Image (cartoon, rainbow, N blue to C red; front, side):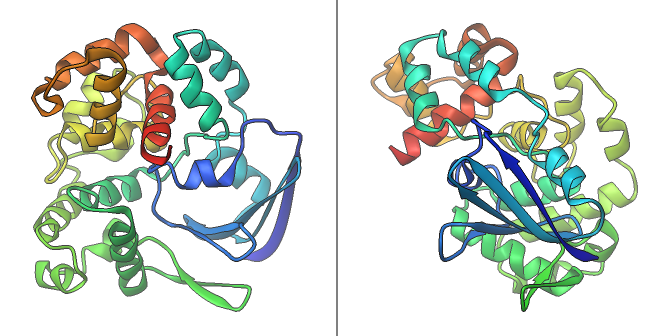
Length: 288
């Protein structure tokens, strides 16, 4: 492990605030000066935007350039994606203009599963604190710029926790779900390796739904925000339901809208880029 730096210039679709505060990740924290520091696998990275430069600096287990390219999806042309989605309608164009620096991260599948189980009926500050406590208790320590950080625990590391241990860390009703899912993955009742080679989103979803604590919305979040990278899925939470109703459906009581109606609408309008459209709409509605 050594301190490394990687700089990219003239990148048009990369805004740290948009990326780290659009609800897709929980291990990044804003620093004084506006940069963000987070843990990716066995690496600690700081990400700063200065003018038209993005500067990555970190204590890395591997080449920082390779790590950043994979995690931040740097080889994907988001400018082309934005152009394609902007012509769908004025509403989506406005949301893209607002969150123009969003990129969908390639997060570790296992970490994504546990993180989004924890996210159920929860708020982002609390989710982040729970994940930090899990990592501190069961992960490995990494030092970076005089501070201690902790990796997200592997399934083997997390299997050391009892339901009572998890409850003490503040998981609430999610403690049993995290415990059971960890056991199921270790026993390969759901094979994460197999999920990465499946091409059909419905088949992947059905496998994920076998895990305790994974419902349709959590499954879609896992598929979109992890290395599974299913850009065609459209996770629906309260914000997404609200924005889709306000813009298109216009029902008097949004809570009674069938999620299948929203999914069909998203499929028809946004096609195979529905997941990226969802992130622009979610960020726009929640922040603006």
